[in-house]
Image 1: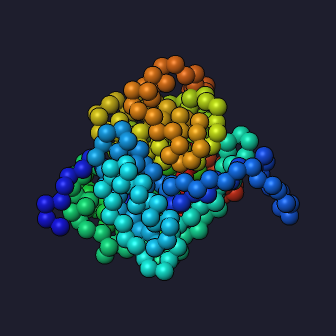
Image 2: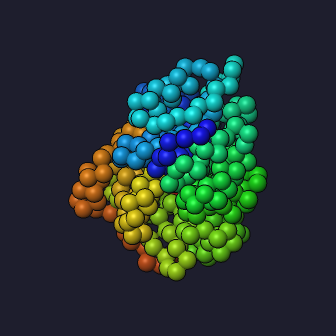
Length: 336
């Protein structure tokens, strides 16, 4: 595809159609619970991140796989509305990825995922020109082989590579060797390295995979990042939470936006935390993507959770069981 237009961000990874179901409390096993409302909205890790970046004025491209149903048409319409250049590979007679998301009265959500194996993006379905004609590549690693090839192409072309990972997918170590900015869920550093202390695990990830930066998103505790020289902790902002769906996806979008602006790391992390917190105040993975100037005003005016000086207190191993109850191996997104 000669002459491919260069964009700021290209995303290769998951999309999903989210059905949000509000319940007063999480159902107990064997119970019968009446739910309060049901809403269908577009989501998915990389798809949401790309749309947020486009909303903030970056030019974007998305590469992903869909079925041939109403959900696939919903995603196509949303990319068109946002202005994102979308390369959507449709699989005949296949349902698109779907998430059923239970949201309790605190805004915390539990995700049930379904993704047909035929929706796995294959390396042969990628076009190198899509990847190298960008300033930054964002991957989630779920379709690991395709993500690895895209990351390798990007690295060879000098394109920055950012990853949002929440599981140790088969073959993920090869992908990790091609990541510049590795920002993962809270429990993953310990699982990848065998180190229960988060500081130690982040250092080990950076040493082992050669990333420029390793970080873990920590829910209400914000984010902890290691840049190879020192740790940076950014506390989360205190907001009335409606729905935590997509918080991690918007965090990554904020980080990519800040990275391409050349902002210092502390400001980048603060902006990312703010964007994620704002999104939690509305329903859906893309419920509240505010303009950049409004996010910056929010940063000044909004109180934050306590800054934790002793990063050694973060013990991700204690959170693995909790994470397992609210995650799956398909298009789930989280700030944890």
